Image (tube, rainbow, N blue to C red; front, side, top):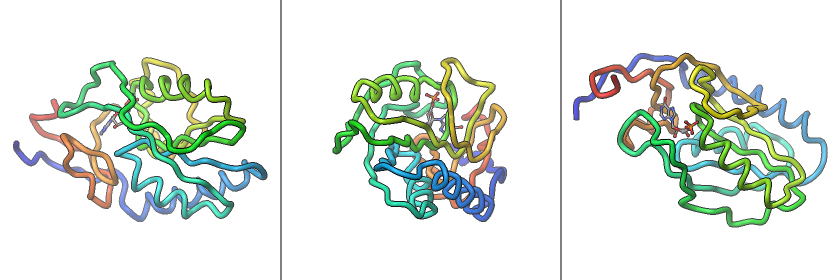
Length: 178
Ligand code: IMP
């Protein structure tokens, strides 16, 4: 596979600054009750780690696995649960922590699934949002950055499992993402 070209979109420093603002907002918005941060694997793992530490109130951390794009850059439309939560969410505030909202299929599916478990509330925090691409309505309460319809990698986001460990978020340009 060719390496592709990376164009810087958000630097590690910009990302950290924004995440600290998001953490402060979350602290303000949840004055009471248990707050479960639910990380959507794998892309949101770095975002979860930094966001959790930018929040000062007590939190619980859990993980959910969802099938994603596989080796391509366009969604198949099918969403599959590959790992369920370890903890019950009845009567707690749930904050889904996602790397990027694209078509909205994943979060739409997850919100419907988790609503059935009767949480006290359920909201979404996403580092990136591509609103132009939306196919299903999703309310994203905390958005790091809105971006145009471009394929991005780094800071947890991958192309065919590569680039997740880049510190910055970059646009991946090249023939393989056309
Ligand atoms: P959605 O269901 O279409 O909203 O897709 C959400 C998931 O697709 C994200 O959690 C990512 O795993 C993946 N995804 C969407 N856009 C990108 C991108 O630009 N780069 C890397 N992964 C992406």
